[in-house]
Amino acid sequence: MTIGFKCTTPCAALGIALVSAVLAANAQAQAVQAAPPTAPAALQVLVNPGDTGEQSRVAQYGVWKLALEQALRRERITNVNVRLSNDATADLGMTRAKSQGIFIAPAHVIGSAVRYGYTPVLGLDKPVQAVLVAPRDSGIDSLAKAAGKRLGMPLQDSVVTYLLRGEVNAANTTIKRHFGTVYNTRYQEALLPCLQIRLCDVVVVERAVYERWVAAGEKFKVVLESKPVPGLGVAIRDDVRPGAEALRAALTEALAGGPTGRNEVGPVQVHTAAAFTYVSTLGYFTPRLLPGATVVDAPAVAQLIKAGATYIDTRTEAEFKAGHVPGARLVPYVEKSAKDADFQAAEDKFDIAGLGADRNAPLIFACNGPECWKSFKASHAAIKAGYTRVHWFRGGIPEWRSSGLTVNLAEQQ
Image (cartoon, rainbow, N blue to C red; front, side, top):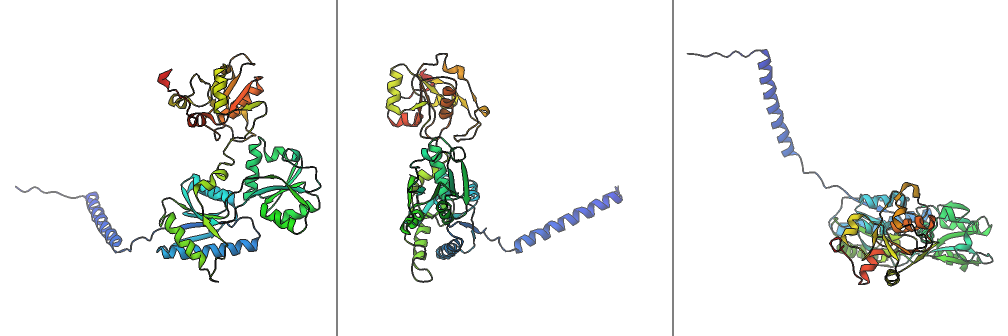
């Protein structure tokens, strides 16, 4: 018995489609096998020589680019994309995104990179310090005396502007709030005539710039100075090879053997992560003082608690359960506002009623250390609400622990 099967037009079309698909798949597989392997992505390198003069910037970029490419060739890395940047604000964003394999940049960029998974390699043996400068015959002799005055400074992405902003923030104010007007210029040298013709009452520049002015006969004085930070430096992302040690050795050798047979960028030294602690925390840490509150350390807090003061823990419940000061009261500060002295308290949530009805009771506010803004903001809220004995424990639970004092867990309540 024979069974016949008749394929209609749709069936025939399906068969043709299947055959075509198989042939296309085979052709694609053969093409993939024949294609050369994909080359690895280029190593991205960003060079920002800082806010020196434009001619100096380009020259510095050329020397660093040449030395770095030579160092990487020694490590058999030739696919490199090096580019010049004049925008440190954008560079700071790139450190958080980790989009560059290597940064050659001023201290605030390298400091940010260290926070986000980069290792410093080396840099100029020439620390940078920001100084606030006024005419010698001026009555301005401190940051406080400069309140309401006319400030001249480089653009916001300059390392000296970054350092000044951090110091002003540490004094519990902001540049916008503290100074009457602000005059910006791209290069620091342009601030000299601003002081000479008294268009500016004070300007902020690198100490080296100020010293050049004084050496040339200008009668100026320093009214505020930042801590020194490392000079222009190199940082490599932790997952990039050859790695920090190999790059340091290769780059040191390359810098020493430039086109003229000498180090054209000046003396260099090893930079460590610890050298960037100060600059990497500026803009992140809380101010060092708070009008209306007494700033206290761990021993003082222990004595206050012993005398009957209430310790207000402003952290989250989970953090509180993980460890807290014995007898602490949890009153969480729900923070949405910016972490700066001009924060908008209306954006946050804090239960003032949790502090108690007695406005004269001694209170201690704390959270997770100097970089935690919750206790600063809660202290501010308490002062505004009329509490008269506000103590701010800026060091918080990290300082309490490091002082060897007892920490309670949730189950110990």
